[in-house]
Image (cartoon, rainbow, N blue to C red):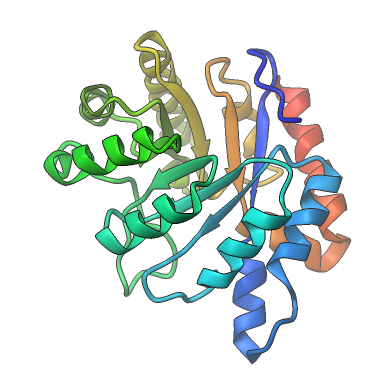
Length: 246
């Protein structure tokens, strides 16, 4: 059972890029559902999967299979479209994280502009919440975006850590402070802060140490490390780094 105690920093494992490898050759191998179950055995508190508009990795049938197989929460990453809303309402995952999405991007680039997209997001957040789906907004650690999340009534925000991951020196320290301040602001306003994107063994510690952050979602790095050491080992090592920082 997932631990929601304040002291516990949860690890959500994103299995998208297991599906990327599968889709490179077609067929059914490697199976992202099998990867998700292995991740849970290794200590993942939840599984994240992004059903993109172009289905470049996760497919519709993967979501159905994950819903049937998992005993831990599924976090469905989704664009703010009517198609994805319909899919989320049909499957009713534990959580739905609304993310920005562009066809030409290789991966999610930056956070959702919840302030600008407020009128589009408001009915989606309400519909998902009314269906019992825990809504998260993937945003930059920015006051205006947190204010939009508050006005939208989103119970969770996930801060984009990609900029932090790619910076160095004082610039990274400044970005870490921005994430820390944003997490504190969100928590003071009753929103649960999460974080993710670009996190590795080498950089996860300072983010994991932010006391208000309750969950980290990590995928690409863990799947990459799994090539060398196996998925279970990669997840257990990440878990150890997170626990040591906490």
